Length: 397
Image (tube, rainbow, N blue to C red; front, side):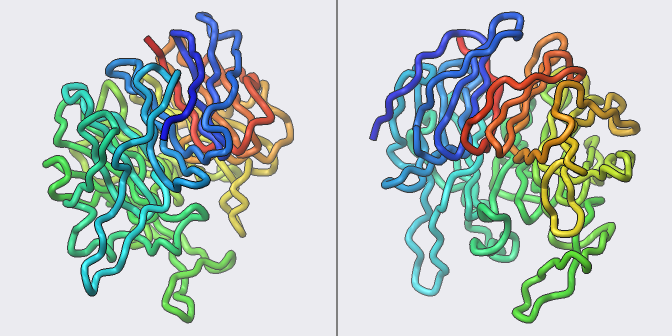
């Protein structure tokens, strides 16, 4: 199956993946003027659309189509045309006595190491890791995780988890070593491999969890009045994990239970969200990193109290920034509406490499917001789009 594309100019673009297709926001060289494209994949659910920075032309799109189901599309001409993968991520047929597994959707896409052109990784729901060695045309299972003897203990029941199902996300490749990778399971925790996926280790020390009394069927079910914050335990739920591009020993994480930072080789996360204003809290889905400064990051707090509305605390949206590795935080809301109940999903914040850095986020209400001065001032770049799943800054050749 092929799909028509969108003619894109070279230069900087925001790729906006939505519940009803993908849109491109092209900007002027000074980033002050933005032009919205016509939609691509109109009507398809697009979870993630990513440009390969190694050639600045190849793009992959993780989509769920109305009649083909979950698949991945590939463009080698910067989005002008798209072709479906010959073999999208798919589990092998279950053997007698095994639990059948069927990919519901591909959720996350990550280009591979700079020295491995054509290698891509994908995360799916149910939680599984996939690899392509031919730029997204054919996908194979990373059996070191997907076929692990304890797979059903390490992952969530596909019928449970988040509203869109449990997902494998935040696939990070160490730029110094293609064998060294991380990923996150929501829920399940953060994992690390030193051998390109043959074996995996937990990396969850220091992360808090929400613990509730087991329900009658044995499933833990957190009621508003029964959530307790524990220093360690099970039910780890990283929402987004990021590795600093120039300092890959620095990791940040926005978790179901706080904001964290990890400086390797240490293996214990520090909850830097404890320094956020108490009336705001440190719950959310996204974290964006400064392209040069490993002590600067941005988060978008959301209300995590009571029934978890997952909207801006008090209906007053704001981004919060730290410039000292989480010791202090500054509210950044100039230009944002005084009142608004924004929800920003885990893939829906991106930071460009400009000077100063540009920060961008998209909302489930279909708005894209941007700041070209590192969060000091915000402007609405697009509105009335479908529900936004992901925002990726890209520079096309």
